[in-house]
Length: 180
Image (tube, rainbow, N blue to C red; front, side):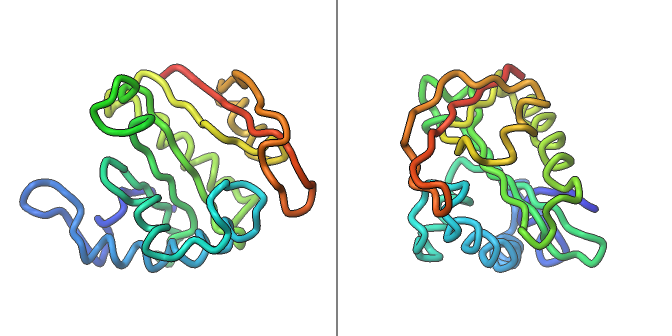
């Protein structure tokens, strides 16, 4: 299993300014999009519209100010991704706090991929100068709540009945935080 920044794999590299190449980003997104779409459409963990168009999805996940990490399996297939950026945007008064989203392809869930990616992202966020990480909307029925609490995240509060879950009806959204 290899964890790397999006755009820096076999289809891309770094440009002369140390940024991911566009070809590499395009290649990585083409592997992320199918499971991104599946996860969001399931209406179990993410609050984005289930029918989010691909261009908008890519902007949400890989837009300006985001550092995107990917996990490749031994065959070079992307099986998980994380998108990290400053909470509420670059240059704002909360920019020293990271906000992140994590997705593991459902076909690869339960194999420790999410835990390995989380460890990597938490270390990298600290190295990037963030002093904490916040999740603004963690569905209370999401199995990842257990993962995040095992990493020292605390639930700061829960907005009751804030999320229309596909199977459970209205459930709460946790706001979770951890200092880095």
